[in-house]
Each structure stands twice: as C-alpha cells, then as structure tokens.
Length: 426
Image 1 (cartoon, one colour):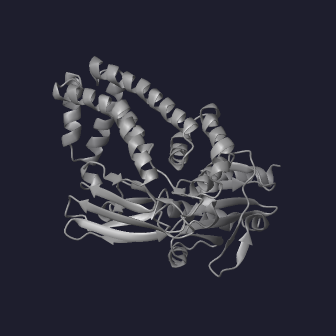
Image 2 (tube, rainbow, N blue to C red; image 1 turned 180 degrees about the vertical axis):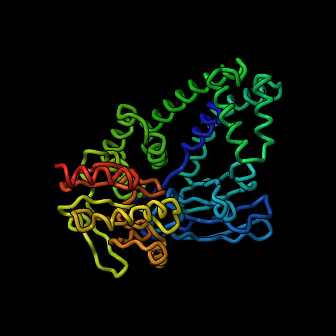
Image 3 (tube, rainbow, N blue to C red; image 1 turned 135 degrees about the vertical axis):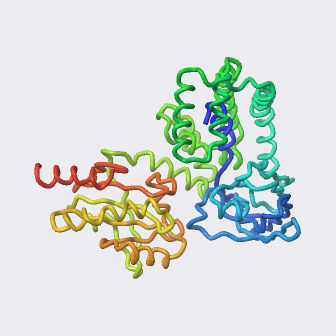
C-alpha cells in the first residue's frame, strides 16, 4: 500500500466515534426518524448500533431493506451517536460505518453499494443541529484537503504517471496474480522497488510529499476547530482522534488530552464519548512497569471475583479473549501446558472474555478446555477492555507478585522464561 493512499485513507478514518448528550428535550424521549435508500439490491438490511461500539459484543437493531428503501423510528432519552452499517458488509467483515447523532428529527441515509466492491461511502443528510454541523464540517474538510489531492492523483493516473515503466510491469503482474506464494514474492519485490525509489515516478513522489503537508494542515485545522467550537461535534472529533493518536508520542497526544480535561470533560460529564475518552486516557498508563488496573467481574455462575484477590502473591497472566476471536483462542490454548506446569508453584491465569451472550463463552471454554478461572465482561461491562487499551482483538498481560506489569503481548514461550527467572532465580 503506497504512502499517499495510506494518508488519504487515514484522513477518512478520522471521522468515526461514539456520543451521548447530557440533557433531554423537555424531559421527553427524543424521537429520531431514519429513512434511507440502497442502490445495491444485494443489501437486505441495515444495522443500527451505538457508534464506536463493538458489534461483536453489543446488540444491534436490524432495519430491513424493502425494494431499495428502509425506514426506522427509535427513541432515546439522550442525544447519542449511532452507526448505520450494511448487514451484508458486516457479515463479510468489511464495512462503511455511517455515523449520525440521534437527535429529535429526521435523518436520511444513502448506501451506494458494498464496501468490499469499493463502492462510494454512504452519505447522510439531516437538518437537525448537530448532524447539520457535522455534515458541514466534513464537507469543508473534503473540499479543502481530500478533493485537491484526489484530483491530482486521478490526473497522474490518467496520464500513466503513477508508476515507472518497470514499476508498472511489476504492479500489473501483482494485480493479475492468483497464486498466494507468488503474491508474497511480488509484494516483496514491490516493497524493495519502493524502498530503492524505482517504483513511483518523480511526479507521484512529489504528490506523496505534498500529501504529508496536507495531512499536517488538516490536523491543525481539526485541532483549531475543537479548540474554538465547544459542541458535541467537537467532542465527537476529539474522541475519534484517539485512534490516530494511540501510537503517537506524548507530546503529540498532550494538546488533545488537555482540551478534553480542561473543557469537554466538564462540559459533557456524563456523555458516552466522555467515558470513552476517560477510558482511553486511563489506558495510556497501562504499560510495562506500571501497576495493573483492578476490577471485579462475575464468572459464568454469576459469582463476582476481584482480580487483585485472585492473583494476590502470584505471578499471573491476565488473558483477554473472546469466543469470536480465533487468534485469541489459539493463544489461550497455548498457555494450557504452561498453566499445568506452574500452577502449584506460584503462577496462575485469569481469563476475561468479552461476549454478547454468556453461552458463547461457555461453549468456547468447553471446546478449548481452559482450566483456569474465566470472568465474563458481558456486552462491554465496566469497559474493562477499553481501560486496558485493547482495541478488540484480545491481549496477554503478565503481572508480577507486586502487581507490576512485566510484559504485554508475550507468547507462552516468552512468558515461561520470565516465570523461570522469577520463580527460581530471585
């Protein structure tokens, strides 16, 4: 994937999130009416879910599409942000999320086709205040930053000035290749050509460099908007920015953290977006060398367990997993021999399963045979995964006897070496 394409995609990613207003309208439930059309007759339903929520563990309403149209009325006590997602796209694991504020009034959505087929992103129209502000903000950013870059890229593409002659030949071979092993080889060759500066033309290289500057300008524009417009739209943009900031240094994160703590946390103290940002800031402190975050969750019998009590005085693995996460379960099973070997020597494991239904967790445990205590984070209970900074795919944390995090994401083999060191050489 080339650098310009990554930058353009990154610009688009910046617009997603979760929100909740802190006041009601005349103490009555808010009535939001959704209407929409679908240009692709293979789409049979539209999912309605809280924005930025994990649809694998949160319930979603399915709005049926009939003859290319759909309609839905729902009520909420507070203004929240939701996502609309094509059912078939979600089932295929590749989707566009059309986010909107559920305000009193009407919203109109248009889905143009399947995300996997590179159809245009769905669009939203609404005259409700927050949606209107959000649509206006997105349109302005599109005009200022996306459109000029896209037009220049399209011009280079039409005139055959993206790839060098040798780059074009290799890219064509890659696009037409059906063999998996050959694809890996061709991909490696493309990366090497790019590294050596032989893949792209000077014109396209210059455009990629320009895109870097455009991204910086867009980031400054966004930060300025958040500083000067203290609305829920800005809170939405601020919350969504955490995805981009996650792997940035503290100096880059700090202006956003300060805006949240000095303005938005106080202005919208009970909103879901505020909760999400609080959890994100908490997760930034979850690092090797810091103390684990304690919590209490039930097991499948409904009995509550406090993590600190379960691992007190032991070296412990905290295994965040889920029945729907194949890689997580393979990782969890790889720890069974380790657990059996060291469970009587001051080592333990506690699993934390994030599930939509408890029965899913039960079936997975019975099939995989985890012999340790497993606790249930049902439908995002207590936002445990978010507080630990886990985006949705599970994680392994190794905790020392004093509660210090020794390792994050280590394999069973790597953890065994640490256990041996701790148990026998201290």
